[in-house]
Length: 640
Picture 1 (cartoon, rainbow, N blue to C red):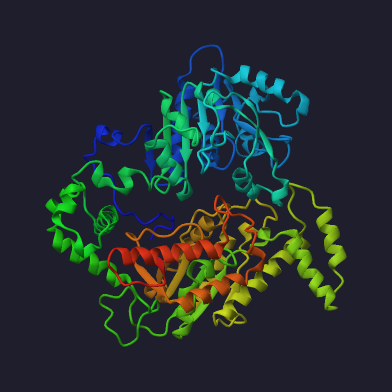
Picture 2: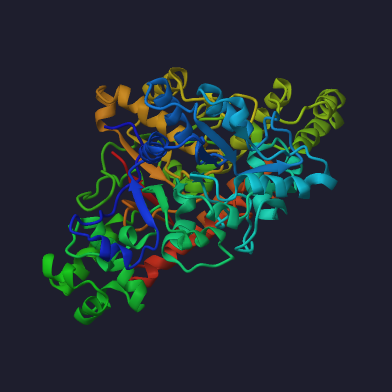
């Protein structure tokens, strides 16, 4: 097994696809790589080749993006510099934006990380580094922006960029004027909510920023725009296939004559060539899941259930290749209907003494030993609370492993409220001490360990309460792993290490599970989910030859941020109205995460609202395509 996590695939662009057929849909040159790392390597190739090809006396002008997107690229450029493949002595860099007010030395500075991850490790001259100055006096900032504009407009040879979920490039918010130049801008509520993951308190996020304008960006001779992850899939679709609109500023890049988009497969999942390849370039290699995807798509397109689809429906909607290469329409209908019907199971641990030939989980052994790995102390109940409860009710030996403490996602006032309650009951006098610690915190620095310990304790207490609410013995079967990569005390996390893997391995060897459930929901704002699934897979890779592991299967759940496409789902667990309410009540036990979600991304709804909408939406889709009607359905993809 490859420990690298890759999303389940539902189809590949056919080898015969021509540039002309793709360009019917795509208006910007686009490279899709299988992983973010390979995408960063591809972008690094462009940067290195451009620097080497530069001729003339003036330095090569490189525009740099801030934020998380370019970090993989910066790491690869450092590697290539150390390998002697490129030098930055004849390079001058200009940064895209900066918070205002903000000193570049502050850990929350947009450009502080550029130094930490890139510039400090290459041979660029300090006098060749130009970042917007977030310390300029308010009455001088407009003049400063004009000078910065004169310095960069038309001089950048290569601009490196990312894009926001609402189409922002730099801090050019939706509605930005196409001819805008470097300026001071007000940040929208959504943008500030997106950025609050870099601050210990949302109120600390600056309300303004200095940014290059759209006209400034468009004046660059070449632009490389990178997109990683599922959360960028929607904006990728608009940028690459949509119409130019000021409501999605990135779409203006369609009017640039030298733009290269580089993305990973997760970000590309909404593009026509990935989502509906039959519209792009038949003939196609029709896998079982791609057939399923095409039939579900056809049901939604013609608004019919599977068994009512006709030969004409297939022909009129560009699926004649499927009929020619696979089977007749009626046989395909029956095949897909049965396939989806067989993934529905009310017995996620297997049904004892039953024919399991068409069931997603074997009937033996029964009961099973199960580990549910939860990245944070609430992902278990948010994403698979109904299945969690069902496994317990069926008598399986269920364990839940909370991989991180989740301590940074607790507001200070929640700590004070909990401590004040203890004080009122006469259990301690720590309230004044903790209030003093909170008052003396320094923005951008790791939180005091005593405060973090209290926040971690709050999250553990909430998790135990949620476990009790669905019938799990929290004293013996709830495990708090506190993986070291997370415990930095700040927003930025450490790297996954052997210490993390050993902790996960030890639990696996202790429980010897027949089933492992892990989070395949990778769009959380901090990236913690991605690190946590890597920890599970790397640990399992090291134990896979042990006897118990040979009978173990790994199931991936989602729910807090995304849901599985029905085409890749291998098990669908239906929930009754009562089970949905029980799941909601378990989520409610996580009081520190209720009402105000500390790190919501672009979705400001509470987690229980997101989860219910997705599971009920899944149930509605099943009903729409002709399957039984349920209150809600939780989906799982089988990795092993």
